[in-house]
Image (tube, one colour):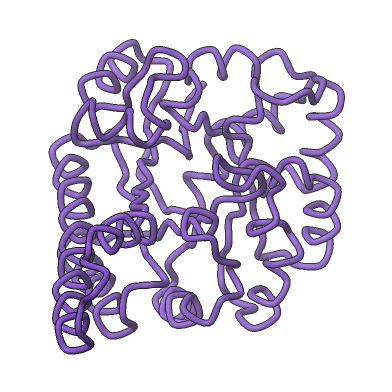
Amino acid sequence: MQIIDSHFHLYKSEQAGLMAQGGESLIGFCGTLEEAVPILNRGRITKIIALAVIPISPMRQAAMKKWPRDITPSKRHDLSKELDEKMLKRLTGFNDWLCRVAREDGRIEPVIAADATISKEKMAAEILSKLESYRIKALKIHPAVNSLSPAYQGYQHIFELAQEKNLIVISHGGISGNDTEGKYCSPINFRKVLDRFPKLKLVVAHLAFPHVKSLLELASQYPNLYTDLSFVLRNSPLTDEVFCEVIRSFGPDRVFFGSDFPWSDPEKDIDRLLKLNLSDNELEMVAWQNAASILALAG
């Protein structure tokens, strides 16, 4: 059986991967390409969907803290403009790197980062550029990293362009390191998005844990809503029985397998997936068919 890991993170260096995890490896992985390739070579995973995440707001805030306290308005304006350009360069540079990596290894499908704090015009230009150059099929957003709701106005032009160009949007869902209650990416905050963009294919990742029940309620009303099992498959208290119930209630044709590497071990997550009491058809859909279909991936 094929396996597509639909939620996989790659970083340029060990240092970058460790910083993303809060400064140290949580389970022994840094998130580098050098770690991912052996996993792919072992053959249990057919393809990985590599999601780019750039913490623009935290990086911007860290840089601004270094500015002199007695800075003049004119100098602040100049520094702000310079910092905006630096943040844009970091985002586009990471997206470029990930797309090049994917072009060199056909087992990797890139999902570029889209950020609500980048100007509308420049973010749109980045998306359109990657669409033309690399034929990207999806965008990744992480509102919680920027301490924002997905309903924040800055995301609207991203959703609008994604809907127009038939790009899937994959968003973080539920709790995160800087939002332990999951208030930013709780299901209720995605309702406005789904109402405003009825043709947008939206993936709210991690079952929006711990707000699983609310996500199921949302799924019953919006057929264009999808989710994945990344991180929660082995790192939540949900039992095998509950996972099966959730998958069937959400709709087994709208749930994807994912690991959240390097926060979780993809091969151990596969072992957990295979233990679930799913039918052969349900397992095939979750393991690879759904991701392959929505992203129009070649076999």
